[in-house]
Amino acid sequence: MKAQFADMTSDISEQQVAGPPAQPGPASRPTVTTSGFFADASNFELRFVPDYDRISEIVAALRVLGLRVVLTSGTFDILHEGHSMYLEAARQFGDFLIVGVDSDDKVRRRKGVWRPAVPELERLRMVTHQRGVGLVTLKPADEQRWSLIKAVRPDVLVATADTYDPEQIAELEAGYCGRVEVLERMATVSTSARLRLLQLGLEKRMSQRLSERLPDLLQDVFDEIDRGEPAG
Image 1 (tube, rainbow, N blue to C red):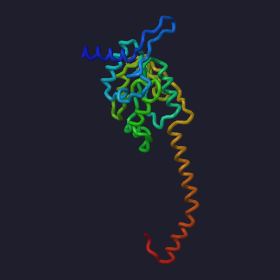
Image 2: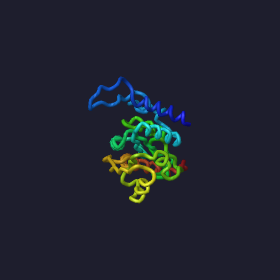
Image 3: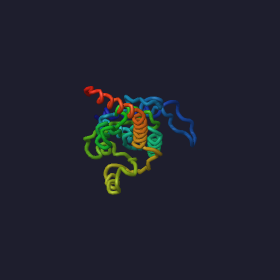
């Protein structure tokens, strides 16, 4: 296990820093490589880590390198500007951002049978395409309370204002993370509101079409009744 951990730390270290040595001076910084966790590419097969134990190992390796780990979670259904802004803001609190994405089952239990609009695998892939996301994982519906937080034990846990109450934040900061940062929702219109607007638009169009066709339809039915024709 120690050898495996050393190999992982070495691999992540090589991914983090690449290229020729930086020139001396106050602006000198390591050159970020174009592969692995630190690449600009989404690298979904690498970044999607479903096993929480594996995530704990990766986090331990990141900490050996002195990197601050940030964790956040959400549904990320029908990804929009607010999601992108939120993830970008979360990433600013550390060096490596881990994102937990709610499973389809978890979303249905919380938001109803018609959600999510986008299936979990596609939502996971879309999140990995967001700038600054280092790793994604899927949060099952039946997982124990705060399982992912306990696996990561982030330096910073980022959440929206309605996620945790003050008592829960105090408990989290006392035992499972460095601190909790609360961000306001950044979308002008939520995914749920967008879906409701689409539904209302559909209902309006259906109502209009029905009002146009209903008189003729009723007249056809009355004519059939007058002729004594059987229904169906």
